[in-house]
Length: 252
Ligand code: URA
Image 1 (spheres, rainbow, N blue to C red):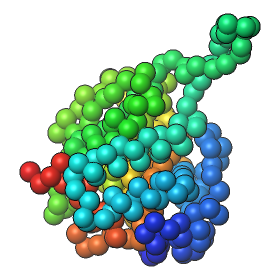
Image 2: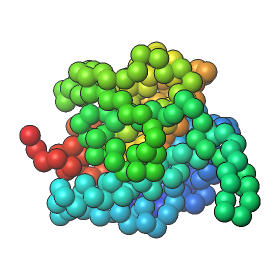
Image 3: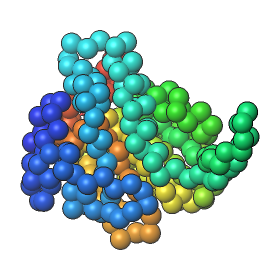
């Protein structure tokens, strides 16, 4: 699948019905219908100059780790604004110094934020800055670089996720193997409404998610800062930004 995209410029090809410009992509605010890019998994790519500016700086190979961490943090906060449009709320009335005012507050049970270790950790602060009351669970998944298959090495999640809105943090939606495995685990715990926040996605990863969740009674949304062209033979996103974990934390 070929989806050319210019770095920092909101243009994508119309391969398989994909709109040419991000601004032409209809935004689907949960819980409306599915099907951007012709895919059943909802995909939201906010079109904002600050997002594109920060993403371009993240891609730049000259950006050092401290700057990369700060930019990723800021970018996630911007993505969180869009990703939480469908967050559940309940009506509430408060008393101002002048009168009563109707408003809303986040509903219970509180949402759960799940960074996928290790690179997802670099997205956590940026998200909970806007959602301080969310609970945080951790999922350790590693991709075998030869088979590209994910395995779980850490699971610190509530046993019961029924009724919880879950936000998964994984910077690079590449083959989609890790994210599909993570979402399957969340669904097996009773989650029904899962939003994945990614810095970058590849068409192959979005297609993999669609294959996995199409036709199932689950609500899966992907919010990402950019949709890139393709994966290379090593499973890296092209043009991408390299290995997100290494760029965040250095090579260990
Ligand atoms: N993981 C990364 O960190 N980068 C990629 O390009 C793909 C997967």
